[in-house]
Length: 258
Image (tube, rainbow, N blue to C red; front, side):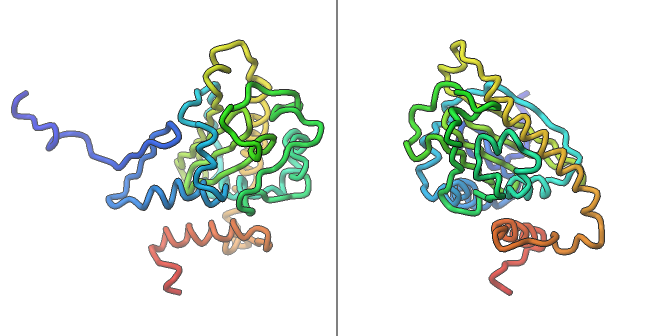
């Protein structure tokens, strides 16, 4: 129709960026700095702006995807992902692969640290057996280690030597969040006959265990005793910083203003 101007009557424009092979969308009229808020989260966690590039995530392929409907608030899921004092009690398979987690070690609170595989562990699999073909571009410092990154507000990136696990959260209600989780592998793994099931199964179990724990915690969050986000110990300074970040975004107040 000649009288329809696509620019005037088109869809609402939104800000987008492509990074790690995913499209990142911001609905704000004036989006925050993508480099500071998104890429910067990976840099802050890994201690090196180039570290995440070694995984070549934009060249990986989706080998498996699971969508979870979690009866918990998205912020509770973020807190759960950022700490690990719950790991020894609800993640026996993960602790077997990453024994330092047995002591409640919160790896995300230490810049550049990746949890090391156990001495007898051969791969990031449910039984510690060898996984699939390693991502060829990772460094020796990244081999046999697990790195977790929180990109606020709603993305988790999990890095291991032979695959990457990426979570995206979609808050639907104060007590409901849909989480979409992808397992990414190099093309030769997907094109060949390598079995990804044991690699996938490990974090499938972790997800199910975590989300069940979050659902058990959710009812108590409406209690008057749950004041100011509960009790945080010094090693949870990164979770305290997340609380302050949420409060700042909700209030629109700059923490520097006091």
